[in-house]
Image 1 (tube, rainbow, N blue to C red):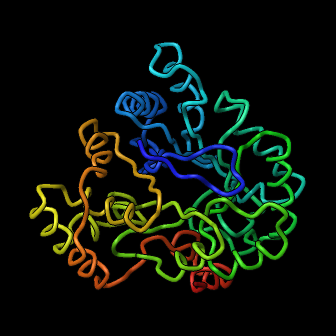
Image 2: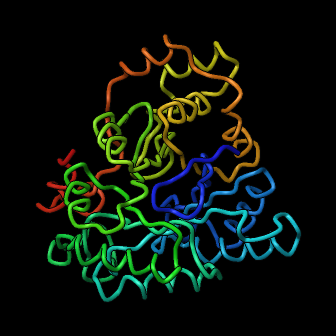
Length: 318
């Protein structure tokens, strides 16, 4: 597994991570804890060493159990072989709750530290979400300065090796960089051939912020995603010409942009296929054709939480 070095992070990060977000299907059919644990063990066997979770996902506990079992079975020799990312949820996005929230995640993960701790979204929600959409009264602007002070404290306490953000625009990053003592190591955002994030990538490259792509295959079979990547005719034709899958072409394209990727599949064969992107490359013509694909984002905060002013403004920011 290839790795990248992050600024202000005490550990290198594997290029491909295993995502663990729930597919947000109805609770009766959602991934069970045991299903997630088994899938994560299979991922470790397949060679994954980076695992991405979050407080709001129901996967921190099964990930911790999978790590403990992998150690017991000798699949890994020490926890240090793994790179674990988790995230600060919006209901804890206040100065006096950040460290507490990180410790709650560590407790569920059965770990002494995570390798990367991210601010999940650039907003604060003042009550537990009961259903979607949510009332506008519980949505608030994020106090970036005070929350980032809490994130920096998590790093200084050794609770995390690195700190970063997720779903931050150039505008939000500019504000963060103006007050940060420790700049964000990572910005994790939606990115794939149909949502290429060129301007954000250029900004982050200039500022030394590494981008990690979530939904690199379009988050098909989730309520916020669709099949626009995996059923893209252009990508499929390129895949056929190379004897690869459409998913592999999409992942290789992300990798060739200098971006790390978090992809989720609980299918053993697809897990392995998603790792097989390093011994071949896309041609200049392939890259040109992909660069000309029509662009459309999949994840929008307003579409998820409701068409409230704060969320519409966040979605409009570049």
